[in-house]
Every structure is written in C-alpha cells, then in structure tokens.
Image 1 (cartoon, rainbow, N blue to C red):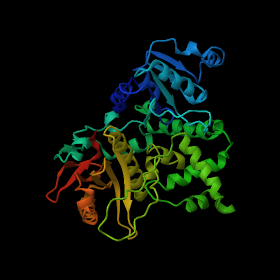
Image 2: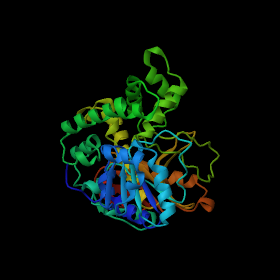
Image 3: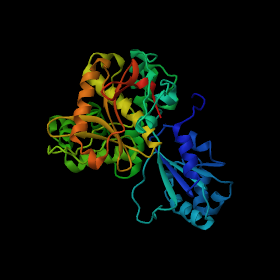
Image 4: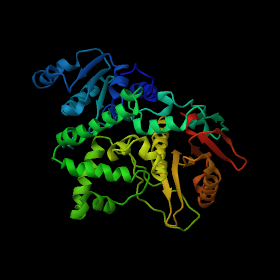
Length: 416
C-alpha cells in the first residue's frame, strides 16, 4: 500500500462537513473511502471488524458516541441500525461535521430507516483519476474549460504503453505501483469476492455464475447503450435469455456494490426533430473492471483496437466524473436515432454545459471536431445556452484551441 496521495474528494469532504451534521461516503470497496475519511475523523469505529463496537450497538449504543467528533463509522452497512442513531444524534446535538459514514454496499431498503434529508450529505467516491495518481499534469482544467477559458497542455509524457497499463490497472489506491500481472490477479480476486461474498450478504442470494456472465456481458458493452434484452441473451447463452426480472436483480446487485457508473441520456432543447435515444451508456466505476471481467490484459487490447478505444473511453469518462463532481456537475451521453452521438456532455446547472468527443487516435481530431460542431447546430442554444466548451479528448500530443473553436485535450493534461 502506497502512502496516502491527496484526493480531489478531500476538500469536498471538508466542505460538506462544514454545512451538515453527517456525511455518507459511498463507493466501491477499496476505492479509498476509509483513508480519505480518517484524515478528517477524530474517532474511528470500524464496524466491519470491531466486534466490541457491534456489541455496544446492542447493549449500550450511547458508548459509540462518546468520542471526539467527527466520528467515523466505517462500513456502516454492516450494522444498518447505526443510521437512525446517527440521525438522532445530529438532531440532538444540532451541530455540523459531527459524523462520517462510509459504505461499500447499499443495504437492503428498510422501512424503519428514516430519511437522512437535512442531516446527511451523500458523497460519491470512485477510484483515482490520472491526475490523482500523477499520470496527468492537470494543465488543462475542466473547471476552466467550462468557464470558457482557453487552455493549453502537453500530454506526450503519457506513453501509449503506460496508457494501456492505466486502463488495465485502473485507479485503485492499492495498485498505484503495481505491475500489470499483479494488478490482474488483484482484480480477479476482487471480482470473485464481490460476486461470491459481498453481493450474497445483501439479501437474496444471486447465482455467482450468472453474476460473472453479467459482468462479462457488461465488459463487452462498455461505452455502448446496450439494451437489457441483449444483456439477457448474453447471460443466458445457449439456454436462451434469462428473465427480465432476473437480469434486473443482477444489475441492481452490482449497482448496490457501486460497481456500475452508467451515463444517462442528456435531453437538451433541440432544433432537430430527430428522436433522441434515452438508453444509458454502460460503464463500470473504473476502466479496469471491464478487462478484468473479460480476463484480458494489454496484449489482448492491442489486438482489438475497437475494443481498446471503448475501454479508453471508459477511463476518460471516469476522470471526467471525478473532476465534474467537484463542480457539482453531471456527465451524460447524447445520441439520436440517426446514429449521431456525443460521448460526454458535462452540465452545471440549467444552462452551462460542454460537450466532449473521446477518441484514442489523435488523428481523429477533424472527424471529432466536425461531429461536435454539427451537434452544436442541433441544440437550441437560444433556450439551452451556448456551450462553454467543445472538446476532443485524446491519448497524446499537444492540447489547445483550434481555429474552429474546438479544444484538443490530451488525457495526460486533463485535470480538475
């Protein structure tokens, strides 16, 4: 395990603790939630491995609240009753920044669990971005791009081989210095534990074999708006498609362990009458999950450049989500019935937005720029507002503003 590297979420957590009584940090297991939370907490209670703390919750729960605040309840879903007790403490103490909860799984809905509205702020964490792991210089700021500022940067330091490694290794804090072979073994074990242990603890038992097939199908569907019916056929294989309800249960289970991170469809005001497609584009929370689910590495990706392009897109989408969250922005996708699509639309509020095409090949810049400009013409900017940025995010090279108004953005230069 490497020493703690600063996270973009660090300052976000400080700000949330400043305006509300409790913060819930949600994200996949091993993404760094506990490490980030413990930097702010003055008392740490690890509910997943502290048997005494779990006993106090039954025998004398007030003992758990005696320590100095903020008090961290790590892996709170192990003892879901802690939710109501924290909520009551926030009400009774009437203070800010009192408690932090972390959770790598969403517990089963419980009618006895009260709403956390006004008491809890929910903060999502993902594995680390290239900027956080030190593989991006961050010269080209997403914040500045969305403010309409001209940005320049150079991404040639991130060699093609290293970019491949980052796709397969991912942004998991424990793997920052790992080689590809070790990372693949770690990820194989990680998915095995999720499928065979963590998901089984959530309630109704799910067939581990079909869960694995669901992961494989999603791995082949990365960056695509694959319909549920296609996934069902994939998972069912020779036996025919599994039932819609069964697939839904598998996807829900994977979502509850925070492994999925789909892009919903952006619905702007349009000049065009072409019908917009509303299916989400499918992504995992980290680009490494797709290759791990398919049991492929860098050599297999280089043999299939089309698949490599989609997994590269997944890496960029992860980074955009991390940077956008700091801005209270969202990342959506857009496509119409004629096949015209835009990989990412980042929106802040009702009218500030930027659109981005993502291509591994820097030579695709003219095609990507033309697509973005054509897309801009389809949006009713009198109602939606002019885009703050149109950007082409690619693997390497120099970044800057083209004469046509489209920014070229090497991923090794993109930052918050």
